[in-house]
Length: 530
Ligand code: TXE
Image: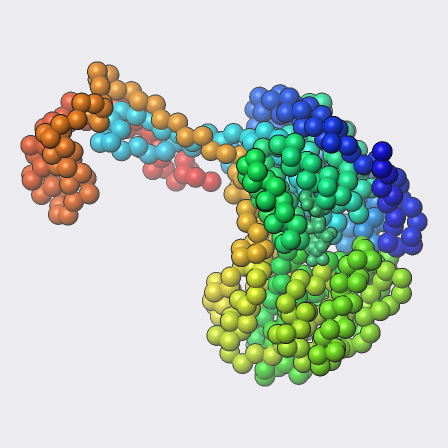
């Protein structure tokens, strides 16, 4: 039995020891989750929402201790734990509590009275069954719980694997869900590193939701492909922030500092490339350097930037910093502070060959680059493999939105940063190598279900016209029917030239009242898709 020790990056204190899950435990977890999923799915959505509403109440009652555990495990400051981890979870829980029944309801589909005389059609949403959630260490509570809640609201059971660096938060999540009246085994966790993640996939859940690095995402997808199991991948970004001269520069400077250094830059949506219009580039760069000097490093409720979560991540950031300086970049100061704490650093005179411009940084480095035109900055921002989030800053909203819509990203915001990804109604996810699939919003919830399409015929006829036997005459009649439906000319012209063929289908075209009523209802705005 191997033991994983959890050590706080703040002061090196041991936070706990956790037994790594053996393959047979993972199999057992999957089996009991499967039977819990059956019970949970049978509960109607509104009742599921009532049960899950308890989660927010429990979280609110324990919010200080929850933030304390998150802070000690990750190194982030308490305000960051409150705003970046607990608050978005409360928001998504409330949103689904209110909207899940509507998002997941059956959807009537209009049916052609010619092709399907008398038939009605509908889409029902079914939960996948057991969802495996493999989550990272940077937002171990928010990402994991938002995805668990999405899976549960949609009617699934969950087996999650937190990062091996976030085990106290994994335990905390289990303790919170244990206080809800859920079927036994509906939410379970497994403990371990990448190998445990592989074993979890091999235990054959029905959906894998992964958040982490591009390379691990590839491995997860490859593993899932052997079954095959559908995957949702959230793989990080190299997000651009674009600043025009007409922006409110003071507000924009504060936005840039927050966007780049929130959680010490360990966010998939943190600002990693800051493009500033040439006319205000020098002034803005100076403003950033002045602003950075006022940021506080610390912990608890005092600091703005906390400790980095892992030594490995510090090494990655240090390597990018050293590489940039060796290749001619200038820096606002030293990266090293003390222990696991790093200084926030602005870099300029950066070039595309530097690691900091090529790889995800996931640390407190902010490269600033000048641009000369709208077209140029769109080209700059669209360069590279990732496409997660971006922000555009200008008082000319039309211009900012015009630029935003030409960016190859899954999400953007104008005159604000990061907060957009916490909006519970906006589906969140990336394009290009930032991954695919979404969570949050109506689309995000439906992604934890699959559609079942049903069609009910109300035909009283002995047989349908497309059934056997075929003949030359039947062929010509169908050609006439197709020309009537899709051919050119007015409705009357098409009837006239295909009159003979249509006679053959007269007996099939009877309108059914139920079908007419369904089609009529589907024209009403409030009956349309949510
Ligand atoms: O993440 P990994 P790491 C980026 C960031 C960082 C880099 C590496 O740039 O520097 O990734 O971080 C589990 N099969 N992001 O190494 O390895 C692992 O145990 C199944 C972006 O910590 O991707 C953990 O639970 N699972 C990011 C989870 O995958 C496997 C968040 C993520 O670990 C596995 C974090 C395998 N073969 C880092 N190997 C974001 N997008 O927000 C590992 N895991």
